[in-house]
Image (cartoon, rainbow, N blue to C red):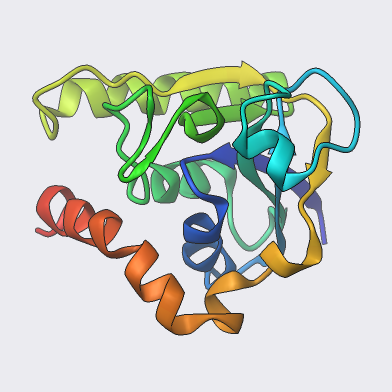
Amino acid sequence: MAKEKAIFAGGCFWCMVQPFEEREGILTVTSGYTGGDFANPTYEQVKQHLTGHTEAIEIIFDNELVNYEDLVELYWQTTDPTDAFGQFEDRGDNYRPVIFYTTPEQAVIADKSKQALQNSGRFDEAIVTNIEPAQVFWPAESYHQGFYRKHPEEYKEEIQDRRDFILKHWSE
């Protein structure tokens, strides 16, 4: 087994976990914070825009079973890559869409994939998701982990706008 790490931000981390966790080759998906100014931020601090952190997920995967390219493609299908100021009903810099690369190879893959998506004509607006070097990832509090399993009704409400967007842009 060859473990690798991917870090993606795409709005509320509650909504990002399930699509990746259900993918073959995924070992763990952790909700947390990255890209900010100080250690061990709390949800309340991040939510109040006090830290510069972005809600994100850290994925540990077996790259012999799933490759980074596939994860980036899944990422595009779970976010609105045309909205730099949040995602769906979640607004602000702590919800901005970012692919945080952990290796130079991941940066190249993410850049090529972003350009291919822009060239595809799937979206009328520019693809504005940032691609940035990974910073320290801080796991969120335990009550945020696996939210979709613990609170299925609240999760269903939280994800509705995202689902509608995905159906509009990704249904063939």
